[in-house]
Length: 329
Image (cartoon, rainbow, N blue to C red; front, side, top):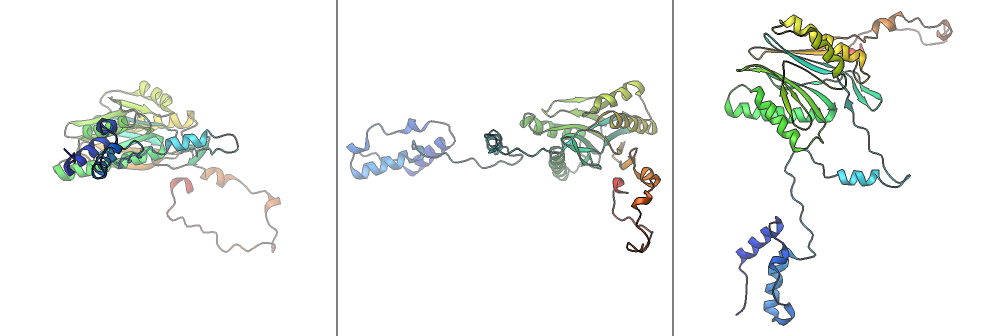
């Protein structure tokens, strides 16, 4: 009796083989095709085609999120012989001091503004306090691109959740989304986060590590300058601080990181999230490294001053600054 597999059976077998549920050899024909007639040989070849021994496996479609598919290629290029390899570019890192504290009326978050690329300062005024929801903000340390894009992804998911539930975002929901995302990549996404917010359960402050572990604490420091900042917290923290005392404590903790850690520097950013969900973002709250006074006190040597008539005349001495950040003033 001739064996002609049905179309449904062939489709079912192809799906099993494609998804690596069973081996292609399991469906191999029990006899050689040369003993069969031409019509039957064609049928058996069609039946065995989805699991052919020399077939190239079809790549699975991307499911979204971060893609590490080029990592083996980059490793092979970097390990090539001297003179033939390609060194990978150094990612911009926010060698950082970030911290947060819970006070009687909400949460205060703080961060410095220096971003480094290796031993060089890549950005003097990097924004490290990221928006997640109107009542939730997050400080990021690690690779600048990872912290920014990870928080943008979670902010989008929280927005969709608010639209579907018509309720305020919960702090624990943001923490859960972040820790699941980071755990999925097993620490390869370099994002160490300090998350703070206020919801119907009160103020909450969380520490989130790149591998996905979390901790809820009354005060938190992270980043390369975390030890200097923690010394300030352990010296001056007390339960039931008011807003002014909490802001001053966070400011001094960030200053300790700025002046005692080479990876931290420039300005102090502060964000205050109050009970009720109102947030106040203060960019450049303090600029301890302002170079304006130093530049204004510098006198140009006479030897470098052009002689009269030897240079273009000064047209105006009035300077107008428009759309400049704090470090460009």
